[in-house]
Image (cartoon, rainbow, N blue to C red; front, side, top):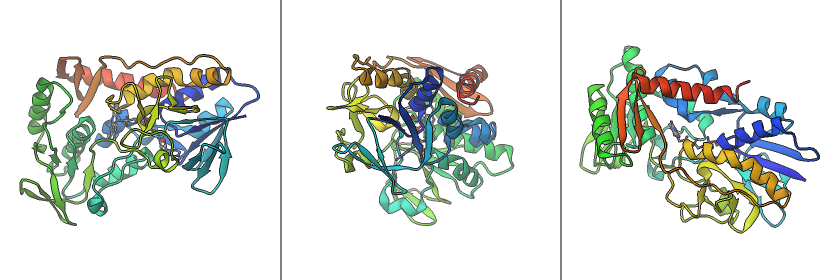
Length: 359
Ligand SMILES: Cc1cc2nc3c(=O)[nH]c(=O)nc-3n(C[C@H](O)[C@H](O)[C@H](O)COP(=O)(O)OP(=O)(O)OC[C@H]3O[C@@H](n4cnc5c(N)ncnc54)[C@H](O)[C@@H]3O)c2cc1C
């Protein structure tokens, strides 16, 4: 009997803690990740701005696995055979499983014609090195006006200001900034961005790109030194390729129990999957952390023939978006405020979260 955890995302980190607390005898448990470290995206903006060191934003998966009695395999899953219950890896190994769980996150896929000019920051172990190189380029251009695009564009701006570089960062978005937030939050973040010297191009999108310039649909031409593409999440190709149940975009389709539709021995959590009952749920770390609470119990429950618990997303969640220089925008429901306290709260939540996995 083998339980295979694929990817070191939020839910699998919690599984490792659960296993360490209550080891499971007579089970071989594996964790497979293409990198020994898992990097925490909640602290990406702080890292970009120079507030955190690399060791503060990453978790040692090999060390955590060893402490839990789990075998760590540094490799990447490329395909699943449902009939044979095996996983194929990039290194060419075949791994058998009784239960497999995917927490492999999402990707960011810009248009293929722009591929040569985009900075690749996903999977998340690429982020730290790539952003370090990118934050001091001559003409930084970020695409995407959602939380991650805004946060990283502001963090690059703050880092450049502190380190004597021109704050000539441009953010291009096809909507208003923070389109999923209230109009009050969108207006406020725009004011903050403009005050900090970030040039914001709203309601426009990238039409063309060559090695030196971006040309928007509305005809604005700007120089770039590669483009940081931070639009919405894209799926990994594994699920479709393996003919697993998928939503229309190729994310693994799961029941509320986090079990793949019709395949109860396959679990999924976090960005890599879509819950059939909540297809429009945004993909962010907040839900991945919540799903983590029930994933391991459900895996054990399934193996013991028990009924699995169901996941219901919270209606509102606290959103804290760092805006640079230790200030943050706090949103909860329709409540919005921007101040230093919000950043202190974000810093406390993020550092407390990391401490759970770093000792
Ligand atoms: C710049 C940026 C900033 C963000 N900031 C925030 C934020 O502040 N708050 C928030 O809630 N969300 C934020 N997000 C979104 C957040 O990163 C994701 O929603 C969250 O990380 C999803 O967690 P996860 O557990 O699904 O997977 P991830 O945290 O992405 O982890 C997936 C893991 O699986 C591994 N993996 C991938 N493919 C394979 C494979 N084939 N085989 C084995 N392993 C594999 C990856 O290497 C990675 O270690 C941000 C995103 C970005 C891009």
